[in-house]
Amino acid sequence: MDQDIRQYLTKAKEQQDSGALQSAYQLIKDSIAVAGTSGRTPCIAPELYVVCAEAALQLGCLEISTACLKMYFEGNPPANQFLCRAYLCQGQLKSPPATGSVEDFEEAVLYFLKAIEISKREPRYHFIVFNASVLYFQTVCLLLLPGRCLHLVPSLRQVVQSLEDVADQDHSWRAELMASLKSFGGLWKKGRGCNLSQKLQKILNRHIPPFFTKGDPLYNREKQNFSL
Image (tube, rainbow, N blue to C red; front, side, top):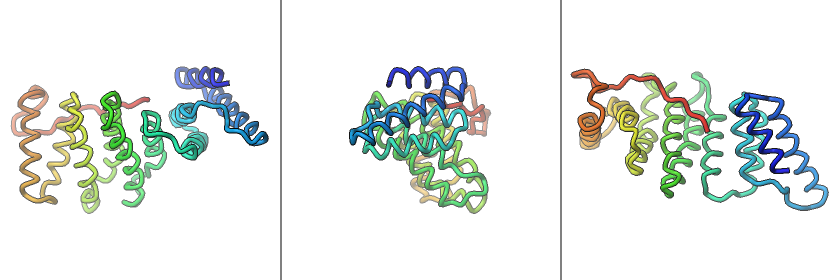
């Protein structure tokens, strides 16, 4: 059954086929129903819940995505790539509209930060730190308003530090986030702000000077799209 589910999910993601997604989800539910009547554990690879949740999110089928993640988390999954991906998917599902409260944004951010902390432990998962940082910034950019941006500083600083911890090679992206954090420098102690300023200037000088104009350290570029 796993193979059939995988084939449907591949078709759903590659061809944007909601019918294939529904077929995969139905097989998952059927397997769970059969296991329930026999008292056995469903014979489905746990990662398929995550892949199905991702495909459903991509196709705008939020109820399926939510249900698949619920089933996955109920299985007490190990801290691996798929748990990180599940957290990223959950963070996107929890991302509120611009009118959402600060608490709503913080709930979504928490899932991105969880994914970052797990992926930092294994070099083979370091790419997820970058992916999470993009999704994080896409979510919190709605908080970049007077009176609300203050709440961004702790989590944004954690994201910036995490990219540095894994030595992410997209220096322009790191500089962009650093510049955003530096713009909130008045909300932090002077020493901490100076440290960030020095790190930002170091990246600009060594890696991406062509992208910046004199006197303007902000790098304006099209935001990167993220896909799992």
